[in-house]
Image 1 (cartoon, rainbow, N blue to C red):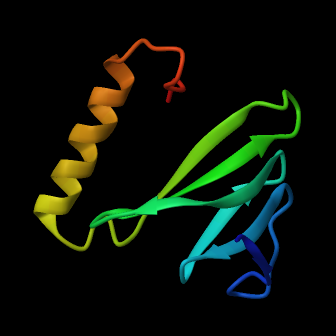
Image 2 (cartoon, one colour; image 1 turned 180 degrees about the vertical axis):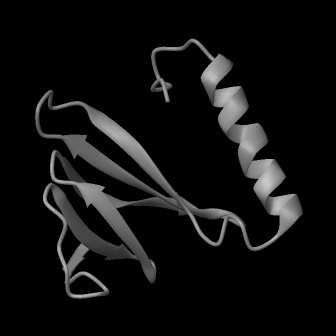
Length: 94
């Protein structure tokens, strides 16, 4: 379950709120309301959320330490490039 938490530095930017799921801190726009974590893997955690403006269900992926390792950064970049090319109703445009 998504648990609301205080910002790590004590400063809350306008339009953002913070949640923790599976020991991972998510900084999410206020238009999204996190529901629950969906899954986790070697690169991060995915949570289910609702867009409050459109009532659509979306998935938000948090990738941890993306620039800590060159190979992991390249794999993440490859994933983003593939997502940009996919035209499907279940994939949001980046």
